[in-house]
Length: 145
Image (cartoon, rainbow, N blue to C red; front, side, top):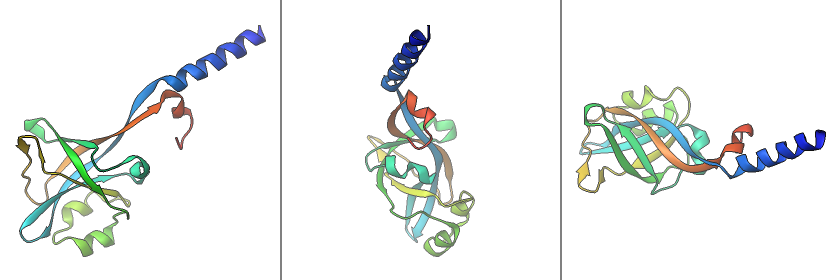
């Protein structure tokens, strides 16, 4: 009887290791104005997403009435953004500061995808998610996987 339970547990763990589920990070996209004549879209994510986020991956923005908008990640900054750095870096940092309750990972987004372009006003923000690949179902039992 004990052998049977042990065998079922091992087979179940192996099966859970084969099942893949999406790895998704939730964050916010903020339109900032680094210079007088330009607007940049920044995706702010939790620092835990750093090892899984790369240029070329996609972020989905909830733009409200226009529905979801998917944009490519152009690049990921090496250092985290905190409130003092945001104050030094941006002309009008209020929209960024509103989302910096703790240091965040910053990814720059492309503004166009195919024939569609997003033209936000400086200070606009959108709820966003980034698809970061997949992970095994068994990895949910391990906090750092």
